[in-house]
Each structure stands twice: as C-alpha cells, then as structure tokens.
Image (cartoon, rainbow, N blue to C red; front, side, top):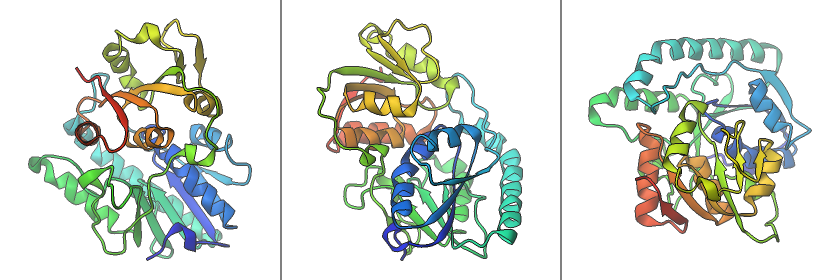
Length: 312
C-alpha cells in the first residue's frame, strides 16, 4: 500500500480532469507535498489549468494535454445526455493513452498520477488514481455506468481516496473497491496557507463548476444577491458588488475572510469549506447525482460544517 509520504526522489507525471476546476484545486496540496519530498513532477494539463498551477508553483514542468470535451446544457446535468457522449469520450480516452505511451517512450517515469482521468495510465508504470467517487450515486437502471466506472478504476495499481476514512464526508461514494486503496484525507488548497488573522465578515459568491450552470446560482440566491460583498469567477454577471476577483490567489485572500460562502455543492468546495470553517450556503447542480447526494448527506449530518439550506 503506497501513500504520498512514501514517494520521494522520483519522476512523476500528473494530470487532472477538466470538469470544472475542483480537480485542480484539490491537487494543490498533493503536489506541494510531493515537491517537498524532492520529486520531479510534470503536469499534463490545459492552458487554463497551467495558469492556475503557475500561481502556486514555480518548479513544475508542463505538457499541453487535450481536455475531455464535456458539453453541458444550461438547465443542469443530464445523465442520459452524458451517456450519449460516452462514444466520443471513449475516443478521447484512447487518444490520451496513445499520447501517454508516446511520451513514456522518451521520458522514463516512476509514477503516473491521474485525478479522475481514466485514460491517463500505462501498464509499464505504477499508476495511481485520485478520486472521491469509487462508487457512483446512480439508479440501478443505468448500472452500466457504475460497471464502467469501477472497471476503469481497477485498471490502476492503486486509488488515493480524497476523504477522511473515519468521518467519510463523501459517504458511500468513497467506499473502497480494492484492498490496495488508501484514504489520503481531505485535500484543500487552504491547507497550504496559514489561517488569516483578519475578521471573517465577507459574503462571497463563487461561480464554481461549468459556466453553463452559473445562471442557476443567480436564480437560487436572488434574494441574497444585494448582500454579496465579493464575486469569485470569470464573470460578475452585472452584479453590483464591492469586489470582483478571478485570480485564484486573490480568491484565496478573500475566502480566508469569508463568513458566508455561496456556491454549488461540489466536493472540492466542501473540502475547502471544512478547512476554512465558514458558513456554506449551497445548492446542487440539478441532475448531478453526486452533488445531490453530497448536499443531502452534508445537510442531514452536519459533519462539523456550518451549513445553510438554500435549495428551495
């Protein structure tokens, strides 16, 4: 069983999924630890992901990597629409494997680490998969998706599960499927910074997740928008707020002063909120079963979070 603490003085290649930026966010403390342990790391990522990583690290190498072509509909996530995209995604999956095989031919590598990219693996190298979703919260009549998910995870030598083994913030989603799997704890970029000494007074709206869904946040929080102090995201959507930030480093400073955070109930955001200890007012993306499950579980159990229900 391999844990992050045991990897040092090695050559590593790493790649995060491009579904939102939560995969980038939760990878930051993992990469920081591996850098501190004298590992040499090359990140396969998109231009946008690289711009974020460069705000935190100056000692990573980068390879341009084609993102998965997810297409979202503005009224929320639809599982059947997603299933219809599987043939196209599978083609990208195969292309990714060929890209990696070509790279390894000229660049000896000790470990491959993939955050939710099923095609980022190769039989010649020890491959680690990062996820909080070993099991998907989907109905039985589309169990084929569950089978595909588990099949691809088992292709990796080991899974690092980003969850606390005892508390299990992701609940049934983070259940082990192989004995070699290991819980590595919750991972937040705010674990890289010291706690702010400033008063927590700000109300912050985060436009997290795919841009196509952002209008749903505006609708759900319409009664509280006039009280928002800061908007984090590429667009401010004409909101008359005191401050609008889109740099991650600026967003970090703002969130460390946040009393209330408004956002979608993504798992990476949950880990950030847990680390920050502020009040979370959130909604799940309609149709996205993972967020709906996490939202309901967090609301029902509290899990040590200050959590407000604004789903209605």
